[in-house]
Image (cartoon, rainbow, N blue to C red; front, side, top):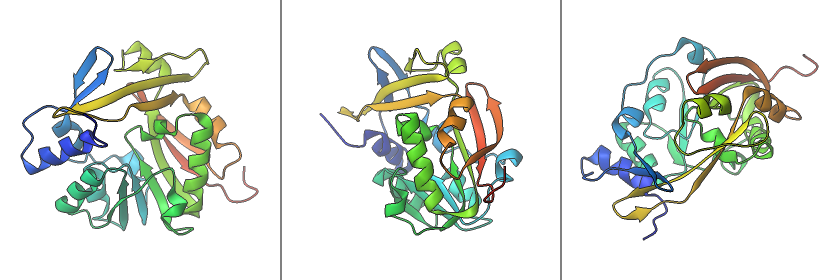
Length: 238
């Protein structure tokens, strides 16, 4: 049986106390149980590196169950978006003040130009752009809805580190600095759509910013992932 969003349904059931089965991620015969409580309902951990790049109004992209949005809205206007109606319902119930169903790759269809001063997309959802061309197109969408002085904090898996650590559902690629990840989720007998992530290193990320207003301002590495801050340098500034 097919369902468009068993992933979101499982997290909503967990929040409402009605989940009696695990949310499973599957890659062929390989299976893992999704750690819903740990990944979505644990407390936000203040992060000085991340927080110094963010100010309001901030767009929280792929906000999940709202952990980060709940934290940031204490300090400034926060708009949280997710493609899942179930997750937006969870955010509403948890007290996120502005949670909306929205596609991160079609931001101009939803928000006005220069709407946000910063953007936050932590959770490796950037990889769903599918290709470096898709990442570049996303940067164009994000540039349109953020101010000329905007900043953004993004993350993704580093292919070399992901391979070395045996990341679930990892796919190798012949091209340097490129990898992939493919899996789907199942819950209560329903099967979600196959998710295809493009993994890429920071050098490839820099390539994707060419021709966009964004530049890589800072990078940190954490286990299998990198996290970067992007800025929009003033016109004519190196």
